[in-house]
Image (cartoon, rainbow, N blue to C red; front, side):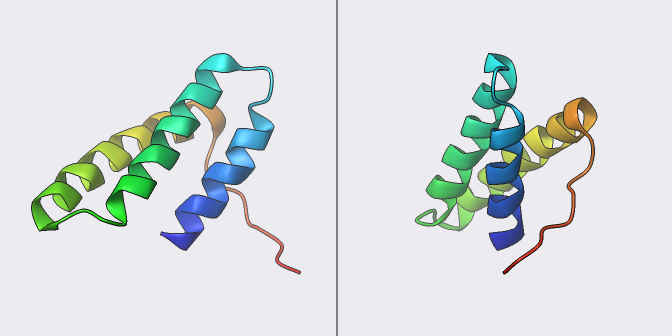
Length: 70
C-alpha cells in the first residue's frame, strides 16, 4: 500500500491543472484511507475498486515511475 500511496501523491502533483485527473487520484487516495479501517468484506470490495481505478490511471497517465527516496 505504501508504493500505491507514493505513486498517487506523485501522480496528483503531475495532474495539476487537470481537474479530471485530480478527481481520479483523490478517489484513489480516499479508497486507500478507507482500507486502513475496513473489515475483510469491505477490503475485498475496495481492492476491486482500487484495481479498476489503477488501470484507468495507468491508461490515462502511463505506468508508475520509480521513486527516488532520500
